[in-house]
Amino acid sequence: QVQLKESGPGLVQPSQTLSLTCTVSGLSLTSNSVSWIRQPPGKGLEWMGVIWSNGGTDYNSAIKSRLSISRDTSKSQVFLKMNSLQTEDTAMYFCARGWYFDFWGPGTMVTVSS
Amino acid sequence: DVVMTQTPPSLSVAIGQSVSISCKSSQSLVYSDGKTYLHWLLQSPGRSPKRLIYQVSNLGSGVPDRFSGTGSQKDFTLKISRVEAEDLGVYYCAQTTHFPFTFGSGTKLEIK
Image (tube, rainbow over all chains, first blue to last red):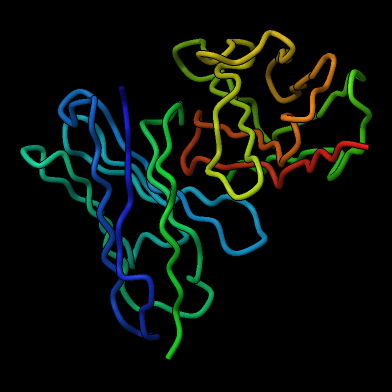
């Protein structure tokens, strides 16, 4: 049974760095890719980036300069780091399997506020 | 970036009726491998999105066959036959042919 679950700090101060973890079960990160997607309150979905099964990454050019995605295959975890956070980064952050988006985590809410 | 234009933005439908949602892309979604990576998702209230259809017309696991997808190149349609109460929520199309992957703005389905 494939499951993904996001975890993070909940509240981040402006200009600080966001660190999120996606813990997966029922699949191997060495044969599956994981995407990060976010959704501001009341708005639509924005794809942020993906880490491929070979460890390579692709990012949304709109946030590429601030974003880093990595993983620890031994712990079945994928990490998102995004710096220079602003209030417009307030959103629900989801991880999802691959680029078919067939499995999603429940999401973790991140609020950027002082 | 590929712009995904969904219409209508909202729908109100009675139980048992059929509805269609349109999704048009600013570029062809046919990848170099010949496949078209256009998918449909449903986000029920307070939930994370659930994939309904992948690659235009393939039903996701456990998805009722009341849902169907058609289309090609830049023009796609999701049809829901015999709408049920559990179908309410926001429907999104998504393309994963071109980077960055992009989503439509959503179609909110309400039950009359």
